[in-house]
Length: 421
Image 1 (cartoon, rainbow, N blue to C red):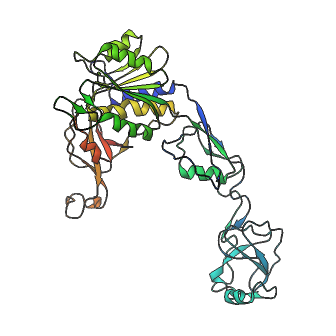
Image 2: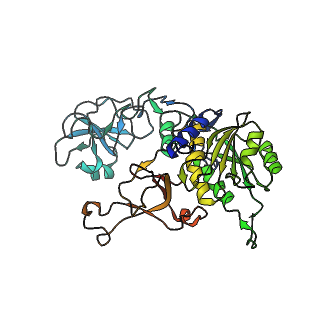
């Protein structure tokens, strides 16, 4: 640490631990098909609040992986009927017989393989004659497919009672489908923590073209979009004048929020009252500044009633830097999700020399061409490269508006990145 302030990684871990101390309420979501209804929009990522286990084998029974014929013994095969998808099939195949099956059909006992429809010589004759018990089928090419060919065995994907999701895991669309296939109707998910936004500053204007003495509040619209993408729900948002009393009143009024985000009043200027107000309210400062640029004047406090207060700088890029440093880990901890990992960068463009603190830069992916790749990097042709964008000052949002990731350059070690939600 420098000047008692944690570095980037230490601050993230501290915030994550604080988030885990918050109460995690549980909601129940349906993974039924609910035909005939319009489901609510899924605007906030959901995370499992409990492990989920399969209630049946997947597949439930041995079934066909193809449209074709379930066969027993070598060809030729005597046609013995058909089994349609969705129908139980008590028939047993005798050697030298075949039944027509569709993809997903339960195959009868005695089936050795499924021959694809297009590999059967008499398929056209069958179409013309219909299901003729006397029809003889032959195989094209190889006399018989290998045993087990084109058969999905019961439980080959998932076994009864097998764990298919763990608490804290992101509930993706595919995981919803896997849960449904495994016989589940409802899943427990962590309820998004409720957040109150406090935008501080007499200079802020919430709409229209700002006058010469004002600036548009660009952070609140940004955070209204960013917070749900990080997994949080937004309760209230209010504009707080630059006064100590107003700051205290706003904190006390946000009593229904688990987390309060205050933008501005986070530094040490003559009208930056928030730290003093938090001290008056008996709050514990867990993080008091972070060794990072932009965004050093950020903080995290715990009020006596357990609510968390995150202090964000008023400058937009500095505030987003604070969001990924303390707020995103705080939310992840509250959801019992994993701490978002800093990812390795295979290739990046020109990076300024590392300084004494971690630096964050807006960046986006580009794919070098043969003309732009250097002669020393022939193996890197076609590999995406993370390039730093302009407009990376602490008060600028335009770089972030075009960015796909934040490039993280620590004082020592290799750069990494965090994708932007």
